Length: 229
Image (cartoon, rainbow, N blue to C red; front, side, top):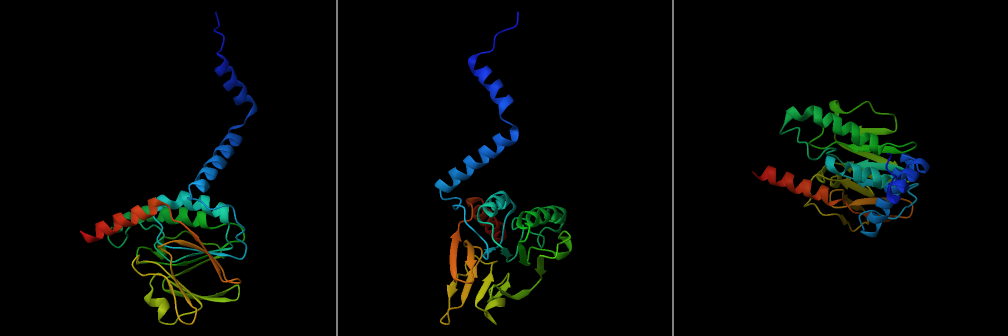
């Protein structure tokens, strides 16, 4: 004799027939986003048109966070000032080249979007020859890049020493968490992409701060501990 399903089981069967897995996934994603916003982990939705997101020294464990963040803020340009996979130390562990290659491909796919430009100043833990084929809207430099973006001049490098020697209006760097961001007497910005992510509006000169996840901070602390040994 066939057993009659319980009311709860019948409800689940009904829901499975009326709600597609895709809708469930989207609903869960929205719920997670709402929770992250309430906890201060994610920002409210914003219009990133004409704005530039500056990031640096990104461990692989923050890639998921970054993908979610980019969907919410959608900047027109992303500037990355080096160490694309900050927890993979190629200069110390050359055997991790394949792992780095896969991580760099994943990150660049996350950063790229239709009509979005990506500018990368490679760091000491990066290798240009291991990067995937790049579309025309993605610019990569091994040293220092100078560009005019939305009427403002930018100088970008992994190292603060390379932006302070011939500064522009916005000078972006990473690498050293001890190098503090500051504004000089002439109103020029020197911004370390390791301390916080920034959405820069060069037209209004407004800068919005976006927090890194704790996973990124912890990974950097682990890196410092390894290097100290």
